[in-house]
Image (cartoon, rainbow, N blue to C red; front, side):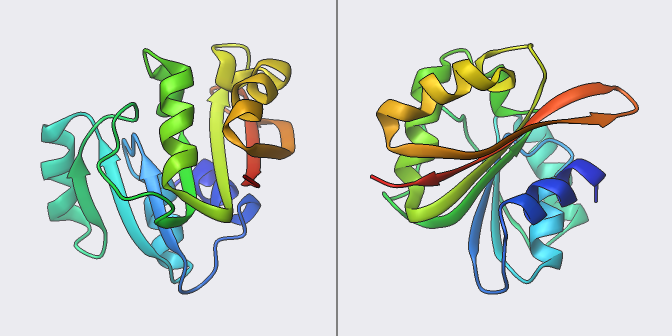
Length: 160
């Protein structure tokens, strides 16, 4: 479990019984932290080899191959959608933002960690502009630090 994953889960207020999606799960920090909080977790990553390794490491998470721009889930399925340094690399940020909002329940939370200034996901103003047309209100956008550098931790609530 990573400190960033734990920070995302805490900021998104993941609770026991929540259904959580970790997008571009990578090393799965958010997925494992959400699982530890008692959530039901699905993790998606575009790298099928990484997904195969992760399945063997943690069977309590449903691991799937997929891209943030085309999530294969029904509308409003997840209470929380998380991504730690993954979705920020999406080639089409607006499309990825639309997909994250689409699969999040009304009133659900979307929490993202992105390197500060590295993309629209890591800039507070650009992030608000990215979410606004998708019915997501940014509640928290604060700079955090790791040994690797500064990142923007943001949490939004799907309002429409």
